[in-house]
Image 1: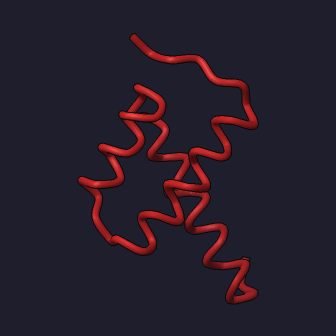
Image 2: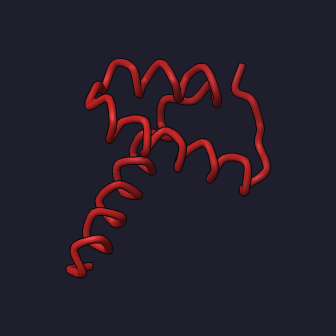
Length: 62
């Protein structure tokens, strides 16, 4: 069963997971985190986009 979240809650989970994945560098841990918090593995693509966007913002290249 996929849990339903308000957009802001989901965005916060995405941000948290992006931060976690930056620290841990572990896709398995990231996948487990997302599944536990959203019940939806497809959110990972949003996280990868967020991470890429954030990285480029930090390097002023986006």
